Image 1 (spheres, rainbow, N blue to C red):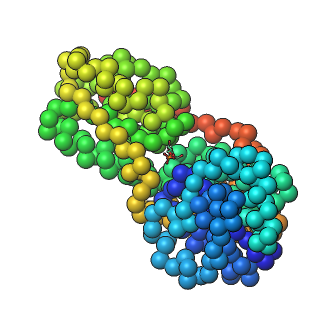
Image 2: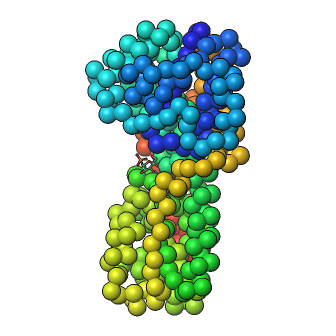
Image 3: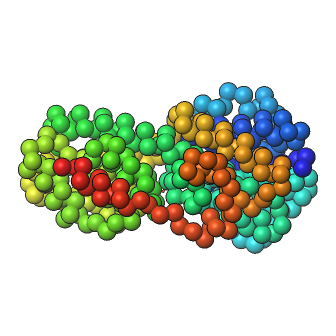
Length: 323
Ligand code: F6P
């Protein structure tokens, strides 16, 4: 294979640039030409491609976001959209494609593979909800950002005897909330995988108050049944039931921004290089991910069909440790 493309798709994640750099330099070292597709699948549809040389990816390993840009492309979800993308791949003479992204992006990669085009995925999403990789690019950095916010909020919460509900990202998966909550010593954690309601959250915060704590932290996943603001609204005029005054901080996209940490740079570098190796040996329709500490290729059809389970033992542990 002589000419390949690389794109980033879906929500960006710290470390995507390190993966682009690894793909580019490793592929060039293997004698291939590399083209970056701008703005994810949307750029594949419109033919927005740029040739990448080794110097073009210089200085990006520590930069957040993605130099190629990323979108969620509704057009690519349609058959005519995918046909346009395939036509770009053909007219540009590309013989393989590496897709760096999460669930939706890898479903798109599988769809292209099913049309007979050679594609390899690289596991990247801060949500850590992608089957085929126990940890994905961006998770560690996003977790550390959430943790820093929790640590900072704790100090001001203590000064004012307040409880804070901190909302972290994760539309369908509570991984970030659960891990940030455990690492941040939260009193209560609300995630989509476990049913919870405002009364239960209030009772946990109240219990912390009754134990004499100077503050309490609740971590709420964006995809939990009740969002942090809804829980707070529930107790707007009844703060005395919680004991503490209640405040809400929603971290939102702050978690996706900024420089990737060492873990994400290294993971992205290994997965990007492994994706090129897979292309070189003719292994397609697979996702490069990390399983049991080893770089592993999982079939994209399995990735599309299977849901990655959250380790519910950690939910129990979080409860025990929140005393
Ligand atoms: O999938 C990653 C993620 O950051 C989710 O946690 C979040 O729900 C979503 O993307 C936000 O998407 P957007 O950037 O399109 O608002």
